[in-house]
Length: 187
Image 1 (tube, helix red, strand yellow):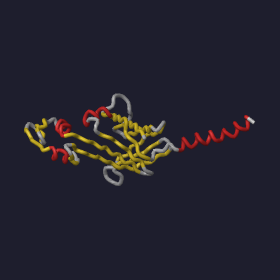
Image 2: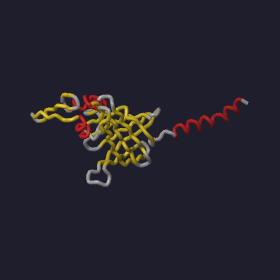
Image 3: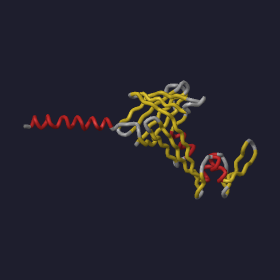
Image 4: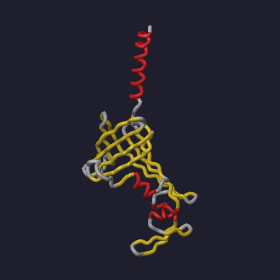
């Protein structure tokens, strides 16, 4: 009787494992948790730009999401900058609702709302909200991913690499002739 029960349970265990693997799909929303960009086509050495660089430039007030559909990937960076953050990014000094910046040896006083507009943002309650969005085509063939930026333009760029998902963590490494990028994303 125990052997019949075991034989009956084995297909259930197999199907349970199979359905778990089938659920691992790139399609959906992902949050970027690590980013590394390197000069040259190989992701070796010290990255030229990484998540620490982004945080140093923008502070911790941003989220970077990737939305994968069947054929498109849209990455969006949402940033919230205080007046002080914006002014310091320009190397200026905040005074009230203006930022004093030295530009090529000339002192310029810029209103915070103008600075926010220059960032492409919307000012509300003293904070500038900026959203940068980029949509690209992509295709996958087993563990190979090809991302085509600016498709159907003279500026088309194609990045090819690998992708994998393990424990709801998406890892993508793509490169072209001049750069290589590692991305780590979570659901």
